[in-house]
Image (cartoon, rainbow, N blue to C red; front, side):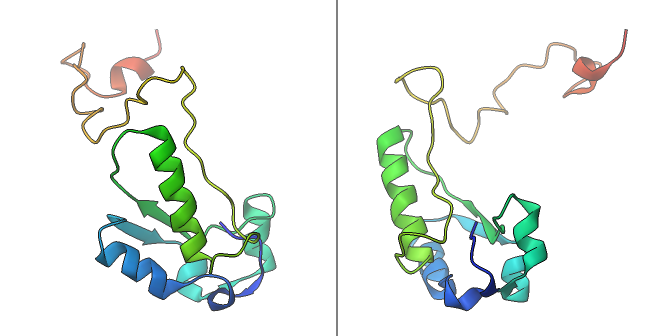
Length: 128
């Protein structure tokens, strides 16, 4: 996210993004309209309370909260030319204490489906 309007290349480093994907720091990214159009409009800034969504980042990192937050900070600063402002800072928060966050790629796949007739959310969404 950015709060700057105008040419995206003035604040966001697309070459840094490509390098982060190429060196496997990031697994990939999904561009949003701001990224695809290359500019941030006043309309874009109204969508998220003064912030425009540039893209979504995909990463797979070891489940160590402080390491994750350090990497997030480093990645975001690289993407926004290391500026102190103009981007939304991201942090992982462990709401249930200081233990492992439980974040892992297979967390959803390992859940047992209780109602085999109505898998996924269908069982939870049925109205009685």
